[in-house]
View 1 (tube, rainbow over the protein chains, first blue to last red):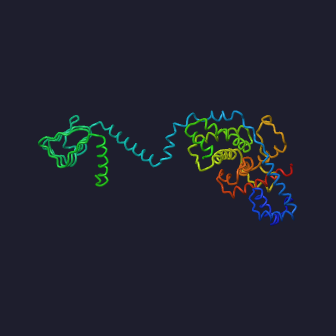
View 2 (view 1 turned 30 degrees about the horizontal axis):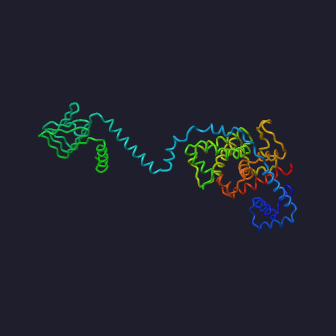
View 3 (view 1 turned 90 degrees about the vertical axis):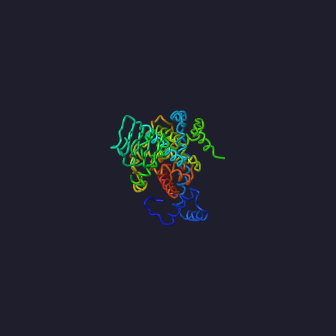
Length: 210
Length: 187
């Protein structure tokens, strides 16, 4: 085969066959075809010989000697322990459970955080008609509180009127005989109740926009 | 019965260092041979082998047991070699070489970074084959090394490189023609 000389169609096909043959993937029928072509084409015979030789030479390439202490150095280069990361494996294998657990952790911790930071007296509602003394929120006799009244971390002392609900969180309520509360009186003492209250009031906000 | 590597990988995943050392012993020679021929440099070959095992170790829990362990480890090592080679030199195509035979960019690159005393090559033939492999463009080099030095099937090479078998076949054919041209006149 001379350089620059155009290959005829038959030789081109033959060369493709040669490679498949060397890959041990040439079907018997095509092998016979190739054989027929080789019988009449000296160039392709030379080509196949050269390719076979190349193939054989490539296989004779000796392995390099691996450095003696390579195993030792590899083992030394490894991080000390795989175990601390075992939970990441679990997470990878249970994605739904992990997401649920994560959600619960976030919910609980945010509630707890909110619970813990609210140690101070908080009053929500109509502040014009109440009197605050230390930790006590007083609705004096004769006064009318418009709408709901909420007291957190304190004592509600009611002597007048509350026209909505009275809610006391982490505290208690004293109602005088003159007291009149139009809505419900609710006392919430525990974080769980408080959380439930937060959730329902959040739903109320969504439902009624108040 | 699972293959030995799968069982060792399971043990190693649980933190058994000795099981991992066995994996290293099973594959270090193969990976070193692969990396040395890819990089043509002793130090870089060692770096690649170390880095490969480190990655294997770190990602043991990502090993899919439906796949052959050898395919997975070869993929890691081959990709490391290819990345390093791509960073090392500009890209040349094999087609460009066929148009100007012997005058491709590789001829002008320092092909051997080994120090002369680092190894003794007894046969001239071995040296010629090595030099010819060294001048192969990266994409053919990796395929030829996996095919001839690691004795992988076309299908296995396709799995390692994540390329279609037809692509691998074409690369073997072209790589073989490239090698033939390089070796023909010298032997």
